[in-house]
Amino acid sequence: RKKRSLTNLEKAEDLIKRYEAFVRRLVTYFKGYIVSYPNVSLDLITQRSLKRIKPFNAGDKGFRDTLLWFNILELAEEHHCVSFISQNTNDFSDSFNNLHPSLLKEVQGKIPRYFEFFYFKNFKEFLTQFSNAQAIKEDLISYALYSNTLYGIDIEKWLEDNLIGLINQIELDYVAWTSIPAWAEAPRIRTVKEILSLSFNWINLKDKQIEFYLEVSLIGNFDCVVFGGFPKEIDYLKQVVHYSKAVERSMPSSCLLCSEGKFLIYFSFDLEIRKINQVEIIYIEDKIQEARDILQEIILEGD
Image (cartoon, rainbow, N blue to C red; front, side):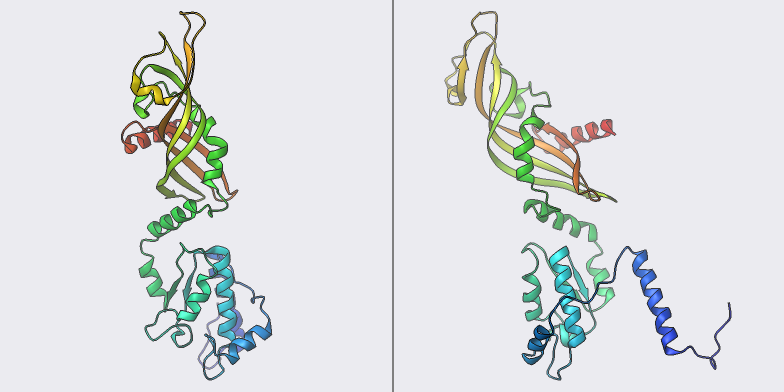
């Protein structure tokens, strides 16, 4: 490759082209993209200039920075989790080198309340802040799951459509996981009356998927069978919704009981197709960690 001499300098336009090509290769390598000019009217920019709305300043400078700021607003509205890095502290920040209050108010109007917009003066600050990026991502994903904004996953709607069938896939003939009395056997959930609580745990980000566990506490009606006739324990009578005595003594009777129950559900979400691709469930008998360990064994068996 021919070396460039000090007496044979590159033309400015050639240097610019080479630098632009380098930047594009770098952006592509990190799976990024360069945004186009924002779709904003000249009249709106003029009004901001006349009113000295940041990043315009008293010297009428700030046209390019304002276009850049509209790009930031569009990105924030689309992606929610956005970091803005700029050394132009004169036009974008306040006297404490924080994002200017008027700009912060603007961007907060574009993102859900549980997301935070990050402003950094340089790349070093950005790297320092996100040294524990995994934990930050997990917090944001947890917020999104709770608010049904993670790629349109509506957990409550999903549970409404699938929870009964999911619970009835597992063997429930054991009373320690719920308040169903010992004399009621082979419980099968018929209806979910109320979901008492939802709690997301152990969120894990992989290359192309998100894994998380959902702890569900509910009250429901369970179909059960009773052998030996209806028991006389008064403590359980309030739980009995319906009792149907068997025609023959040798046959079991049927009973509908209202009871609570706790379950741990494992979800695997594919980020490429934006769909749930694996679900497993187990009841929580005592400790949630033990339930998780059992679920992990089930997941490994499935793989």
